[in-house]
Image (tube, rainbow, N blue to C red; front, side, top):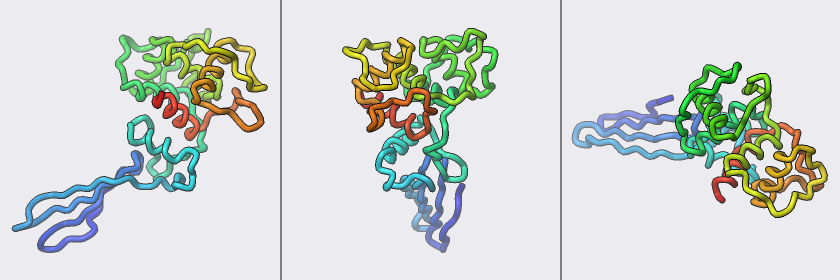
Length: 218
C-alpha cells in the first residue's frame, strides 16, 4: 500500500510497497518552486527470508524480481511451503516468458485461474506434462521432487545423460531416472549428503525456485 511519511510546504515524502513482489518505492514529490518527482525503488525483506538463509536467499529474490513467483500479502514468502502442480508449471511457464498456448487443455479439472490454466495448457502442448489417464491434471496435488525435475528435463528437450545418477534411492521409472540423472549432471540438484535424492518428497517453494534458477543459469 501507499503511505505519506512526511509533508511540508516544499515536498511530500511518501512510500509505496508491494510485499508480494518484495519491492518498495520511496517518492519525493516537490511543491511550488520545487515541482518534480523523484522515485527510488528498493528490495524489501520478506518476513521469513533473510540473508542468513544463505542456501536459498538469492534464488528467492531472483525469482521474485523475474516475475516467476511472488510472496504473500502478509509479507512472507513461505519458503518451506509445499508447491502444488499448478504452481510448478506456472513458475516454469513464466520462466519461459509466458508463451500463449494455441488452445486450452482439455483436462477435466482445469482451475479457472487464467495464469494456471494457460501454464497447464502450454505444458501439455509442449509435452512437459501429460496428466493422468482419467484426463485429469490434478493441479492441487503437491509436486514431488521426481516430478519437478522431470518437468524441467522435458522443458530442456529431454537431453540424454552419460550415466545414471548414483543416488541410492533412484526410482523404477525410466523418465524419472533420466531426469534425475540429468539434473544431477547439470548441477541443478545435488541431493543430500547421505547420497539420496528423495524423489517422492514434496518439493517446497525454496527448492523449486532453486531448481529454476540453476536451470536458467545453464
